[in-house]
Image 1 (cartoon, rainbow, N blue to C red):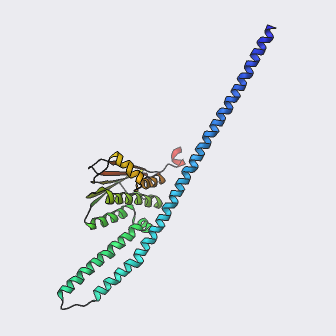
Image 2 (tube, helix red, strand yellow; image 1 turned 30 degrees about the vertical axis):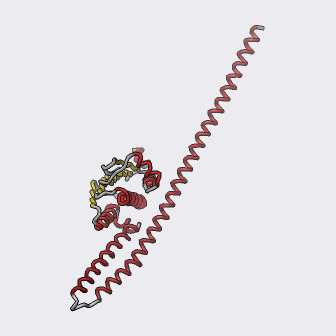
Image 3 (cartoon, rainbow, N blue to C red; image 1 turned 180 degrees about the horizontal axis):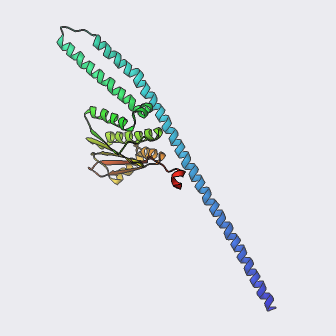
Length: 269
């Protein structure tokens, strides 16, 4: 009788342990499946956001392309025609009028030159032909000619031409940073340093403006003045964007993007 009771107790205990083990395995399997499902959902959301932002960029690029074409085809032609008309005027005796017309021709010629440069900076095709360095230099030249801001561009390392689509995104990030400086920084100087290495491109955009505090940074971030847009663009090309600033010490935007990515062959070696 005692043996029977012991056997029943042991048997019951084993059954309970088996049931508990089965229950735990089911729970763990469910949790594993649940977390995997969550990861898949997050991945889908992230991919959707990336694709959405990519589409927005493509639409924006197309818009800029259209504006660039309009500037080149319409405004540029009108100014060129006006310049030709001014050149055709013959004034022999009136020195004052001749001087005025010469000045007007000079201004029109400058406007044509600047509009052509602006058209190039808006056009993705032009940017792809010129390359990143020349395109940035072109933009800085336009800023210099306003007489309001001094600029400098320093390039270190051997230039590595990256994928044209990525290069355009890097260029737009730089343009956004420059635009923020012009609109908000109250600076007198913009300096850009582009450092190329076999693995990455580091772009440092600095100004000597008023800078901002951490609280201001949060406000700027929430107000959508381009900071989030710059970060989204950087993430789209697997880059990183860092912003450093202190009141009265200016602001520095640091963009780092990979120019070389590991392949399966590289990993095996």
